[in-house]
Length: 122
Image (cartoon, rainbow, N blue to C red):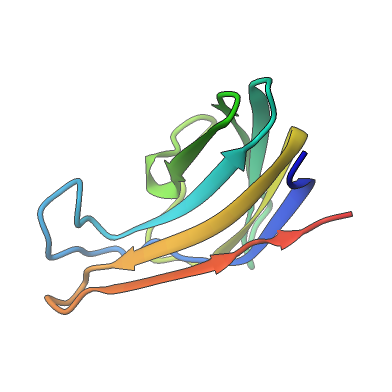
């Protein structure tokens, strides 16, 4: 199968402001997870900060042979991820998956979109 069990995204940030219509153009940070397995994957996402302990894990599922995009600014349990604060994340899956992160920054009318592949673990 394609992927790894552990992925790290060392850079994360949810802009505190947005100029576009919600939810499409709301500033956000997203992890995209691809599951090519023939079984549902359960993933746990832990979020790390520079000045305090981590929060999570946030448990998510990705159906077999599907992809899911999860917006960090929609995570609520066990607690919300603060906007306007740097963070990092580690994604751990019971099955091998592929992870990528995307940020939409719509603080200005000229939107910025960036995406990078997450770093795969062993």
